[in-house]
Length: 80
Image (cartoon, rainbow, N blue to C red; front, side, top):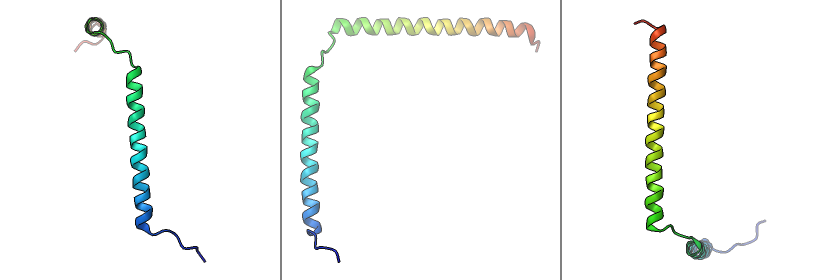
C-alpha cells in the first residue's frame, strides 16, 4: 500500500517557488556574464559592417561572373 503524500496544492506551490528561484538565479547569471562582455566601439562596428558589405558585394560579383562564364560555355554546347 502506498504511503500518504503531501497534498497536490503544497507540491504545486513548492514547485512554483523552486521555479521562481531557478529563474532568478538564471537571470543573475546572465547579468553577471553580460558584465564580462567587451562590447565593440562605434568605430569597430562601422569597420566590421563595411567589411561585411564589401565582402558580400565581392562574393555576389564572383558568383555572377561564374554564372555568366558557365552559361556561355553551356551555350556553345546547347543550341536552343
